[in-house]
Length: 481
Ligand code: A5A
Ligand code: ZN
Image (tube, rainbow, N blue to C red; front, side, top):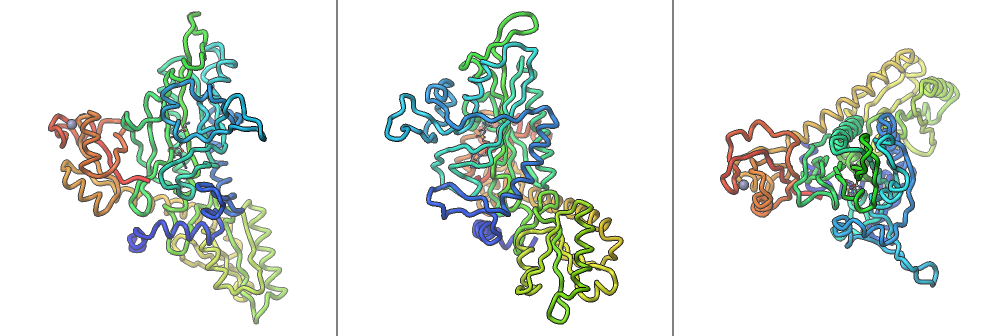
């Protein structure tokens, strides 16, 4: 905790240091702003996260598809609210070689328009519904706010966008709840804590009826939106003539939802669990779960040591662990420890003369840095327990940090002070009017995240601090990314 407080003010620096030194992501050097490079180790972390995301979606009837990167201008413009929201952020392809294109083509900023166009051809009847599609692709947004590694990219390379289609509004409401459940499970599996808010009307996704967002508090106290779920109503199906035959034979426009997660999930995973030594990865997404470091006896890795190490590694591999042996002869064990700690490997096994003799291994945990001697025949069970314990420990620590950073008050002045001094999230009673919400932003100098999905009991009988009217819910505000 002490160390968390310490790097509150140097978190940005820490994050840049981590992703470059641990060779996760090369950012700021590729000569296009807002575009980074996934390096092999980072790519693997990203892949294991995506495996979880895909598994959660697939197991609930989502089907993966792949839409074209280019969207013709007329398609992108067809839903008027949508294009208003994205107009300023679109990259346009205007030429093929030297030839000007007859129709400008957008690099997709998201795929509601291109998919709705195809759905108008594919979907004709309520019998085909609900339909749940998703894709994992690059999207392009010419972000005007300061770009940032993984967090505010101009090429978002890990954009998981899900798009669903329904026969009526009730079914979209059910789908929104399912999406929230899926996202909770994904973040829970990664030990990432979140707060779920219904975004205020002025901050919803362009074209949506409403937006539900997952936010988390980063180590510097600023809030990051890590995922969103949108009820799109019939905006796009009307614009694209996605008409379906209903059960009673009548024709109506279908209903839609969409929900997205991006590279931000990787940034968050690294940030909420990391420490002064570097990354601390939960075992389920660690590219290397166990690193074995042989401790040279009398200056070298002799025959006995090598064959014992081979035996340990074979055992762990046969039980499905992702194991790496660091037997570099020209690097000292201490330097190896430093390197694998930086990369967040959950468990290190140290094996030297004593371990060979006693048929044991020394197990060092990355999260607590504790070391334990374990008998070889107990190693597999021990590691399974340690993995479970690391998972629980990381998750609990991260949730504690989030909870410590949510501050509830009825006073605008206290809210303003809390944000100025500690950042984090403040919760104020709110009458529900846009006007008062916007006024809070101004008075507190923070951004509205929105309200809890259910009316919180603490606002009962409490007044909106801006207008003095009765509070119907609470408003959350924070300094955001
Ligand atoms: N089609 C819907 C799902 C959509 O585009 N929603 S969204 O605009 O809210 O984006 C989904 C998520 O992507 C956001 O919640 C945010 O976490 C992330 N995101 C948006 N813009 C980003 C950017 N420039 N860089 C990194 N992540 C971004
Ligand atoms: Zn009010």
